[in-house]
Length: 167
Image (cartoon, rainbow, N blue to C red; front, side):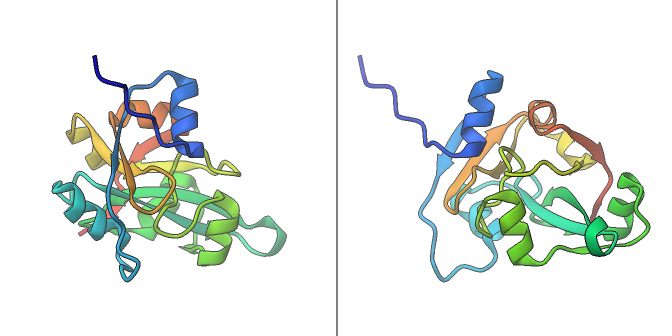
């Protein structure tokens, strides 16, 4: 009888473990020169880029009342800020400053997971995720994707589905 492989521990995998949700880890060799982390993940996993979701952060409001919003869209698409704003109820959104996204989430760029973030923010998953039995999201570090059922992801992340992606 073989040894069960040791799970990679990140706040994302811990959150899923504590929730008792089934998921599969997919580690891959991250290329330090890569800047399009979603495309790198899709290639490494040999997965349809419509099934691999990138985690993005947007902000709305101003000054001390800045609101952060987490958005998951397929790596084959772009985030539609207007649609996200409509879903969250904010008139104007912009992409979050990368340093602010890292501080807020507790993860590095290219490894921001929608799960186990340092500070919770309203989270939206593009409705196209519901077309798949499982999707891939960041596991909380570069070179680690997690495969999970979209409904399970939404439950653990406290997320809602909305049409927020644009081609």
